[in-house]
Every structure is written in structure tokens, then in C-alpha cells.
Length: 142
Image 1 (cartoon, rainbow, N blue to C red):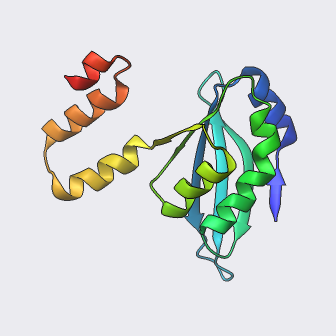
Image 2 (image 1 turned 180 degrees about the vertical axis):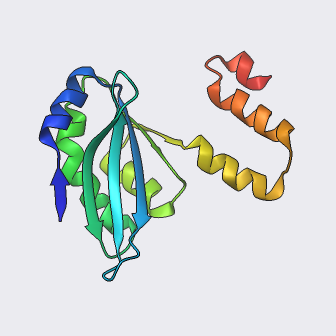
């Protein structure tokens, strides 16, 4: 079952940046399952919930269903939307199918978590953070 937050969507289209975070968390209660969520930030960096869905598993098919439900509202945003997520395989494919041509970026925290498994120390943290926040190519290369 998918819930849509139409008032939040209207506010997001009018005043929020064209960036949507996609993530899922496993539910550990009696029934289990996965909670999928689409969120954005408002002008004061407050979290705006755009939609949620509860399903049995985090699969490409379930992500496609969830994203298709939100597609019309997302495409109504005045700018081309960019998506931020972890590197879940099904999610990466689903965004490409439902929103071809839109940007899809990876969450810095998830990237760093994966990097620090193999590379220890503050030098990596500093280099990765500087590359992530660079908005000019020459700064990224440094």
C-alpha cells in the first residue's frame, strides 16, 4: 500500500530543491517487510516526506511500483529532479527505468562507510569529503 502526501508534494513543487532522497529500512516487528521512502529538504533544511510504501522485500520490481506511483507528482517539479540513494542494485535500475535521463547520485555517508572498510584514517575522510562538496572540476581534481 502506498501513501502519498499531496500537500507536501505541492509545497515541494513550489518551494523545494529538485533533489529526492530514496531509501528503505527493514521492519523488524512481527510482520517484517521493508519501508520504502522518498524524501526532500525544504528551504530551511527540514525533511519533507513525499511518499512511503511498505512491501515484503526491497526489489527492483517494488521500487518500480513505488516510483511509478510518485512519477506524475515528481515530473511536475519545475526543474529536472536528481535522486540520491545508497547503491542498492534494484533501486539503481528502477530509477533508470522510471526516470530515464534524470541524475542519480550516491549518498556520501554510504560511500564513506564502504570506503572505510578497506581504507582507514582521516586523510581518506578529508579527501572524500572535499571531492564530494566540490562544485568546480578543478577543486574535485585536487
